[in-house]
Image (cartoon, rainbow, N blue to C red):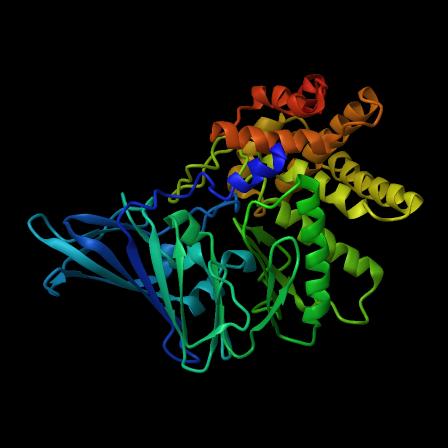
Length: 478
């Protein structure tokens, strides 16, 4: 009961704002099928004294890297409380100075070139996209913020072509709204961490689970949304059971199955968010009735892994994750935990419910794969401590995926050894899961980032077993 209560309280995540603050209004408009641009209007709660600064994100939450989304913003316009145009001046970094002293700013407008963004950003998971009958928008690639207002609540209005279905992960619904919709975000982080999908090629499914699960899918070929939904629901239910409750009132799986824009474009990475996860995959990853058991296992595991990030590190996190720095990718010391512990968790939930021999073989196969990654990594990476490697991976996790693979592999193997010790010393009465639940409870209690040196004591609160020796062993160079 204590864990369930804690998880319910986690709905009030550390990025949420005070609801008593004045509300900003964001309006997003995609005017017509085939348009390459989207227009965003920010209306301030009251006309604010100039000068103000508009900031476009470059860092990506959980992306461990940067993209210069400001390259695709043009023009930027601003208007006074009297409706008069105000001067806008581009400065260093992803910033624009709005207005001059002595006037008041009421409204800021800008456009984002989606087609250029997708052409130039080669990683599909980092870019919004536009097609003749579909538009997929990542919040942090299209929404800017007014410096100093990022903690205020936001009302979002979305307008698209009249007959187009529109889906927002902030306020998912089935069937999707047509032509326009609206949603609330408690802060800029919540807005930027959300997604919007629209168009006649968008498919939406709602499934009943511990919380409502929505599957929003766009495919450039034949796939079965019901099979994708079945796997996603199984994964979500397994992860919720692992933690003992859900920290979100609803959850969305957004899948884009794409044909390559160019030979240089990369597909296959997925991203996690507060109450959604996004999957940017090649068409070969589409699930149909002909998909093998191995293919289905792979997708179920991928869903479980990214769904679990809604707990860690979205709501239980090390230093650097929150408050988030939007203009420069933060340096984080605990990526090995966020990615590795959660990968081990996904292995555990994916092996559960199988016959004992099959479960054991699955678990062994997955851990052997991680050991192989570590063994085959370059010597200079093996010589790094996990903290050093995490700092390097903070800006190039997927860009040089040797860093990413080693971080999640070494972190997951640490978790596996911790689990083995906990089970051994408690005669199987406790496991790593109890430690992870303890981490969630601790995060509710203290509402701050944990420090690495605090971790063994936090885990021990739930297990009664000291795992400091295991942690320190894996933190060292190999």
